[in-house]
Image (cartoon, rainbow, N blue to C red; front, side, top):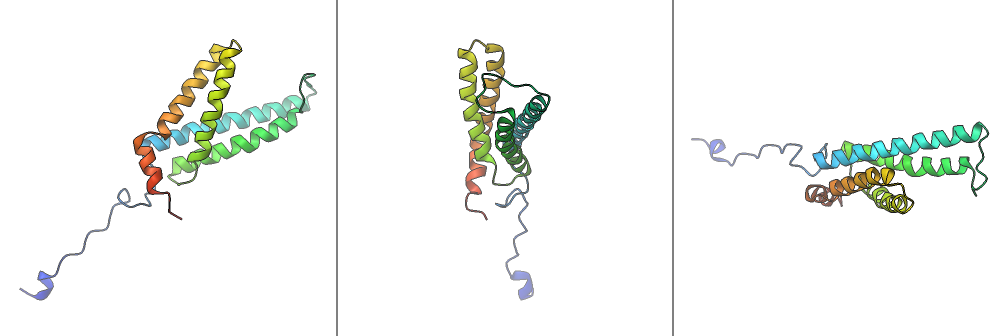
Length: 152
């Protein structure tokens, strides 16, 4: 027997799921990413609606700000959420915060809808927010985010 045979064997390369730089996120994070992308797309569609409505001459006499200004706000906020959702879906470390913040903000909107007598809008909005928060604060998702905290 040669000395080469008795030498310790090298470890096999780790699979992508075992390394800290896994290319894909766990399913719960990917589902949260899909939810974030859907919410971001809905917000951008509403911004387009506001621009169209303003361009066709509609003016709300009770509004303090123009439809264009509100549309810009929607593009900034929901554009960031759309990008954050894509990052989550792609397994990138950035993206969790904006999606969580949107869910928390929409919980406030849900409360407002309930108190305004619009439960048919409040219930689906609230369910969507609770599902999003449950996905992002699932132990698997929290562990995934924590293991990527110090990555560059």
